[in-house]
Amino acid sequence: MTMASVTVRVDAHTKEQAANIAEDFGLDLSSVTRAFYRQIVREHGIPLNLFYPDMPQETAEALDEARAIASKKSARFDNADETFESLDTSHVEQ
Image 1 (cartoon, one colour):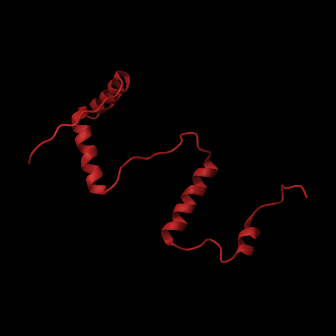
Image 2 (cartoon, rainbow, N blue to C red):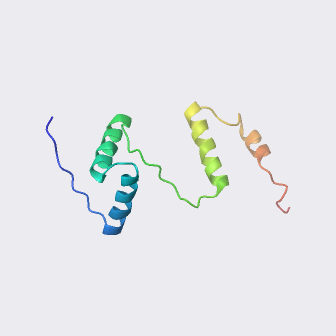
Image 3 (cartoon, rainbow, N blue to C red):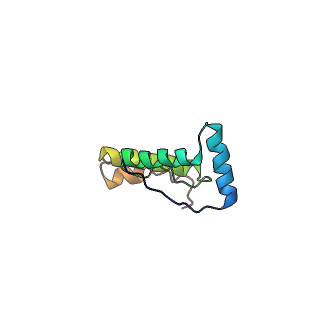
């Protein structure tokens, strides 16, 4: 198998922190990068969890629920009336 080189530019502080973490696992950055590339190929996607770390819990739960509903390809409610009935409007002034 022919090998290819990859050059990655990153600031020195980030590289040092990443190298320290990799070292804790007994790895070097080249090994981690190779593993990352293999995982991309294996999963046919980018294996990253992109999120806002300060996302409200309620938002995270709603996103999880939406993903579950989408994966089932089924609706949570059968009609609009059920949707509106599920909304808690007791705190809204009339």
